[in-house]
Amino acid sequence: MSALQSTRSAMRRDRVFGFLQPEPDFQLPVDTSHGTILYVDDVSVRFDGFLALNRLNLSIDEGELRCIIGPNGAGKTTMMDVITGNTRPDEGRVFFGQNLDLLELEEVQIARGGIGRKFQKPTVFEALSVFDNLELSMASAKGTWKTLFHRLSPAQRSRIDEVLEIVGLQEQVQRMAGALSHGQKQWLEIGMLLMQNPRVLLVDEPVAGMTGDETERTAELLVSLAGGHTVIVVEHDMAFVRSIARRVTVLHQGSVLAEGSMDQIQKDPQVIEVYLGEEA
Ligand code: ADP
Ligand code: MG
Image (cartoon, rainbow, N blue to C red; front, side, top):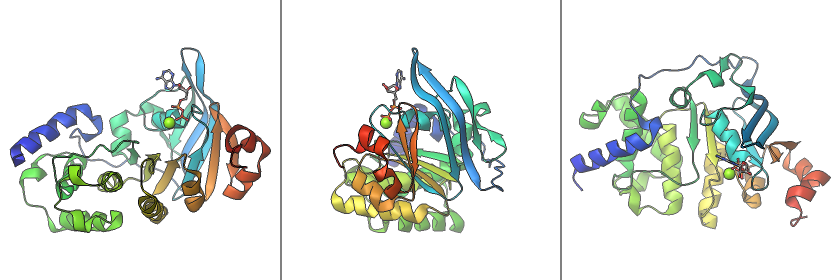
């Protein structure tokens, strides 16, 4: 595929993925002076009368690595949809820092403003190289497609190198993304989010379908991102959760069932009953 064709195909993807649309670059003035970066306050979401989220309350500190677990249908994905502006709650409020009401922002503004989301399936551009994928996500962050056809500035180039190193894909830099393993594609997508330097990263089931080795490297990657970013991970793989867990939130029927360290969670009789039963 020629560079032009690749670009055209990327532009088509751009229509599908709203977050890649060129927009003016901006930073939201997030006030985290009290330590909280996300605050979900009594949020309910109803689908045809069914409560997917039922007065959900959640508070995430800046720089935290938070794991969210819970049985299928507990509302984990809906919670991410609410935070990213993809689903509007029927009740409740959602704040980014102390000051920003996320319910007043469009999905694209939230994504550009520092809340990046990684979906379960990787959505990299298979016909482009690893390098081009990273460059493209920077182009969309800067709100201009011109960067695609011009030389990169030294700062841009070094940001790409930095991200390649963080996600461990230096040796794959010229490979087509389509030729990467499933795990490598997931890391590339995390890298594409990192190009936009998000304050918050939401990651939905990152290790599904990964090999044991890839799972371990993903654990290291997410742990290394915490601190500099706030990382929220939804995952079913309990061994993986145990390996990265700090504070863990258990969702059940759209509300928080329990919250605490992995040890506390594993001893909680209610959690054992609804979720960890077979493991106990
Ligand atoms: P989880 O990610 O924890 O498995 P979800 O947030 O995907 O749970 O779903 C919570 C509940 O809401 C499920 O019962 C699901 O069937 C329902 N649900 C999710 N999205 C929709 C929708 N768009 N329309 C109707 N019901 C939905
Ligand atoms: Mg889900």
